Amino acid sequence: MEEEPGHAELQKIPINMVSSDDIEELQFNHPSSIIEDLIVNGDQAMIDVSNEFLSLLTKFFENREDLVAAVRKIGLVQGYVLVIKRSKTNRYVVIGCDRGGCYRTAVAAENKKNNSSSRLINCPFKILGKRTAEGLWKAVIDRDSLLHNHEPSTDMAGHPYCRRFTEEEALQVKQMSRAGIKPRQILSSLRQNNPELLAVSRNIYSKTAQFRRESLDGRSVIQALLDELGGAGFSHNVKYDHCGRLTHLFFAHPTSIELTKSYPNVFVMDCTYKTNKYKMPLLEINCRSDELQQIILFMFCFHAKRRTRGL
Image (cartoon, rainbow, N blue to C red; front, side):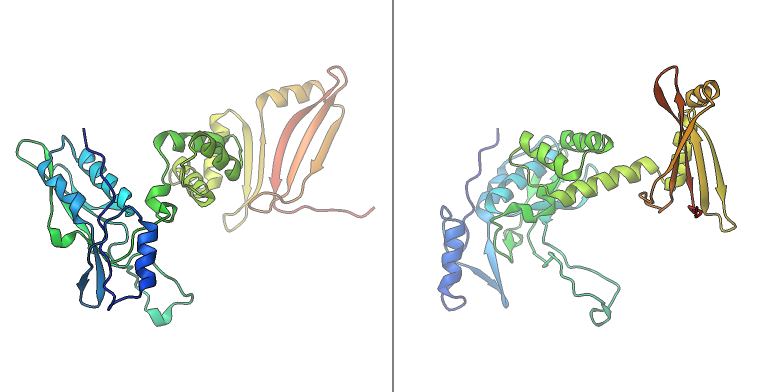
């Protein structure tokens, strides 16, 4: 069983390089850390967190996932989030800081319309995991690579990796979103089950958007709707304009059609406002049954324009 890693031994910043306020801030954020000295790489201050990671040199792991989990566990205790940067199946894995690397864009800085920033600051921290000839995994560590060029985080919610959902939570989000529950209510439900959840509303929106893309499977929204109607046995008909845009969509369930044939005397029709994504009015037609003492839903029809006549 893995030993519980302690707090990282952060390095203290010399007085001639930074102010005493910065030192006090580090000590306040990490009161149990042992403050020693800071490593300076050129003009950049580097924080050495090697002590805990060097203990991994004597350990072997049955698979890659166990190695990555052990490295991440130590990093989280220290206030850093470590992610997989590169890997090759059954060969090696490179684990680095989630703030490592630089933001790359094809647009020149002077041509950007909006000012933007990136959380990537080219942090040099890196650990290599390799698979041995015996099939076990071990960490290959260079002490010079166990350096961060930024302070540890005090709020891990700022890291996208820490806001990820577990498989069980993702399934709950999928089921509740299909049931029409609002994202803020989904988030409240998840937090009741897991008070330590760091996800925010934006993560719920992103997850539901991912589920929609997966359900569409490369189809357009209209094509997916037509496939659903056909698969459910609905009678439907569509009309398109000369540009191929849908202008009318009619659909009704076979049972509704049979009931309408039985009670064809009174129909109630109502055209709602443009409350859908494509701003198309919805015409809803119902038939009234005096025998059943109820109104039976007959059909729906989306159409491009709503015409009104004056009295």
